[in-house]
Image 1 (cartoon, rainbow, N blue to C red):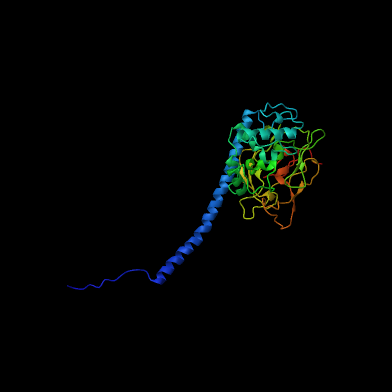
Image 2 (spheres, rainbow, N blue to C red):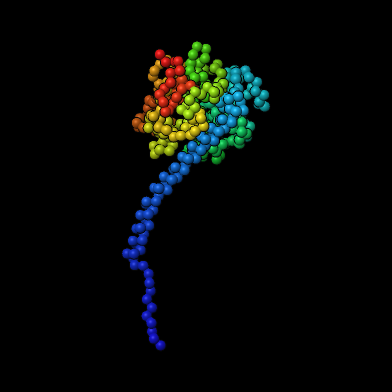
Length: 339
């Protein structure tokens, strides 16, 4: 018998360390690319959400005589709501709020939501009109950008939002899970500009507030009034959620996602657009200015300056000439209001 020496084959410690180093290098190269791919995918979903909003808006216009989707209840209007307290509001602004409450009570099964006074639903809740038109169950997930983590969190358990935007749970906070990342521009539901006998909303000094004439009728705007649909913003994200600092939309470097009145969706740098105007002083050449003063509770991105507040321009939120004006790809249009 011959003894055959058997030799074991394996890795040396140095070879193993080299393999681990190569794997770590590959992971280091691939992870940033995967992260960017995920970010791009979330942005694509965000644009798709606004695209769905645009298609619903166009379909609504076909069925309602070319009207832009907006609250339709007016002062003194008997809506035949099954909740009597929602009928016959004393102002059109309150009638709009009552209509929003009616929609939430029906589509979100929230009969506990109270009538609110001194508020308007248009800025964050105009999409409810389209949800009602489409008989959609609320909250509507497509109304939250994938980067809007707080709204997505609230949507999961609308009756117990935590953290609450103002601490505690006053009545207004019951609405927050049904809000939208995407806001309709004010001229989609309010007159273009203030003229004698026809006042319009205008910016307050705070970025979250409007000055709202109580006796003005809202919701009577038509798509046929939009002169340059491919250049006029219809809805937009209040923040640029897809950039590292996620700035407020009104900073020139922000690139919020936007839906235009022709149905296209784009992400454009705010500073590349026109600066806008003052809707109740339409002959003035200067744009609207207001303060961006983010919540101390951390629900809004910090100022870019690091100060408590920054003074910013209105840009496409307050387009010169309103629906007849231009936001991007051309200079401001003088629609007769400029000196």
